[in-house]
Length: 577
Image (tube, rainbow, N blue to C red; front, side, top):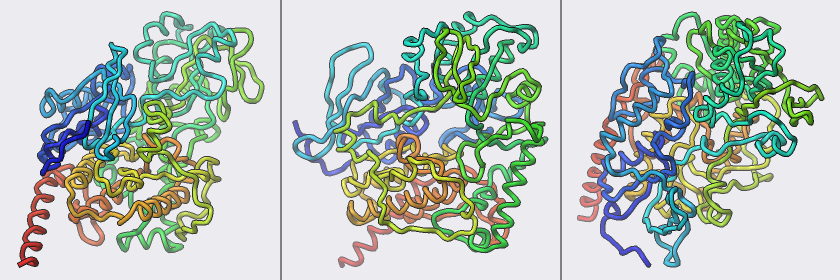
C-alpha cells in the first residue's frame, strides 16, 4: 500500500510519538499550522511523559519555578508549594489541562510503537503498533513522524545491581528503580517499618538509595521524613544552586547565567569579552566559584562534608535549583545525620547473605531495600530494533579521529577528564532535531531531546522549526546529508570540548544535544534558521543580559512565520514577472 500524492502536505497523516510536553506542544503547533491529520501516540495510560501520573511520587519536584515548564498558549495555575517551585503534580495538572483544551481526541493512549520503517515506495513511513491490552501488531502509514519519546522511560541499572541480580544472589528485600517509586511506595513502606524516632539509631538495615542525582535526593528525603533509615551511595552528587532568598528574576529568568557559559559561536561583544580574554576568564571563574560556594553556605553544608562531592556546575548539566533550602530537604537531613552518606563510592554487588550490598572497596552495608536512582537508558534502543535505528539514522556513529575542531576559549581551559564514551561517539542529529541522514527528506524529526532548563520555551521554538521544515519553508539547512553529517560532527566536537564528562551520543533520546546554561543561544540559532529575530528580550549593549526572558516573546511565532512566507512569495512573484 502506498500513500496517495496530495498537493498540500498538511492534509497527509502525521504521527507525533510521545505525550510529554514536547509531544503536546509539537502536535499543537502542527495543528495551528494547518496540519489536519495529526495523531499523538503514547504507550502510557495517561499523558505527561516524565510527569505522567503513574511516575509522580510524594516529594517529587522540578527544578523549575512558576512561569517555567509551560508553553505560551496556556498560562499555568499558581503552584502548590509556597516558595513558588513546581511539584510533579503541578506539572501533570498543567499538561492535562493543555491536552484537554487543545488536543481533544488527538491522543491515542496505550499504543506502543514497535517499529518504524520505509515502505518499498521509499515515501512516508510504515509504523507497527501494538495496543497494550492486545497482542497483535497493526501497521499504519504516516507521511511524517515526530519522535518525542524522551529519555525518562527506560530504567537503567548499574552492572550487578539489577532486580535479576538480586534474585540470583538471594537478596531478600525489594529492588526497585526510582521510576517505580510512586507505584510501589506503599509496598516499600509496609516492608520497612519506621526506625527509632530520629530514624538513625536503629540497628535495622537501611534503605539503600543508589545515586546522588535529583531523584535519589528527593526519594531519600521523603523516606527520611517518613522515619525510615536511609543510606545514599554514589560516586558524586548533583551540583545545585541555593540562596537565603530567591534569586531575583533579572538573574534567575534572564540571559545572565547563559552569558557565563560559552556557546559554539559567540554572538555578542560581552560573550567574546568573557570567553576569549584572560580577564573574561577571571570573571567567569569568579562567578561560578561564587555561585558554588554561596549555595553550599546557604544549604549549611560543612567544608568537610561528602555533600560537597558534586559535579561541577560549569562543566556539567546535573544541576538542581534548590531555591531556599528547606529544613526537611535533602541537604538539611544529610547534614543533621538523618540521611547517611557514603560518597565517593559505588554499589558493586549484592551480598551473599541476602541482607546487604557490597561496595566497590569491599565494604559490606546492611540493606533492607535497594532503590536504584541511576537514570535512564535511551528509549530508542528498546522501542526500535537495530535495523529501524539504522533506517531512521538515530544511531550514534564513531567520532571522526581525523576531524580537527577546536575552540580556543580561555574559559574552556582546565577541563575535567573525558568520559571514555564521550570520546568514542558522535551524535548524528542536526540541531538535535533531524537525523542528518534524512536532512532533505523533510518527513522525520525529533523534539524534546535537547537538554534545557527552560524546556517549555526550547521545545516550543523547536516545534515551530519542525513545522516550517515539514512545510518546505526556506530554512538554513545543510545542502546534503554529507554536509549535515559534517556539521553534526563539528557540533559533537564542540560538545566534547564543552562537556567532556557527558557522553551525549549514548542517550540520543534524552541528549541529542546539550543546551543547558546556553539554552537562549540555542533558541536564537533555531530562530535565525527560520529567518526570525533573535535575542527577543530586548535591552541595550549593557542591559540585555538582565532582561527577563518571557514566553510572550514567542507567542506569535506562527504569525511571524506566515508573514515571512508571504513576503517571500511576493518577492518570487516580482522576480518571475
